[in-house]
Image 1 (cartoon, rainbow, N blue to C red):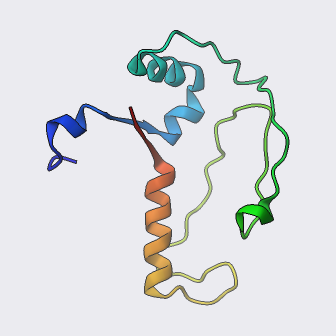
Image 2 (image 1 turned 60 degrees about the vertical axis):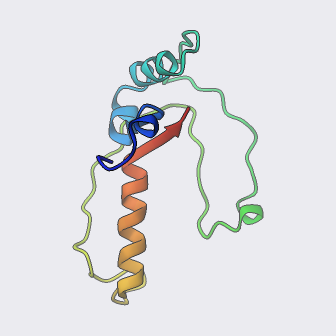
Image 3 (image 1 turned 120 degrees about the horizontal axis):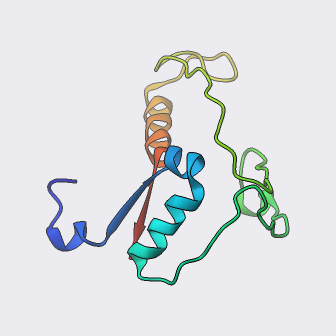
Length: 113
């Protein structure tokens, strides 16, 4: 991040997933202000849900779920890197790298203005 040009840094907005789940209304209010948009109040316990999309259309391996409310995720144990995957087989280096990259993506959203 430090190596990016200032012009790029000024156009990046980072939002931690943990913050969004813990304080969704405050995070979204700050994001809207950063984007220069008018305030938009959200009601995290009562979200409108769209129609369900077909997971197979996007070639998703696992089904995803939709929820009508934002709730802080329940902490869970994360196995040590290189431990057995869900099928009991040890992870190879590539799988471990992909898991690490996915965890980075999940932990923060990067929006371009």
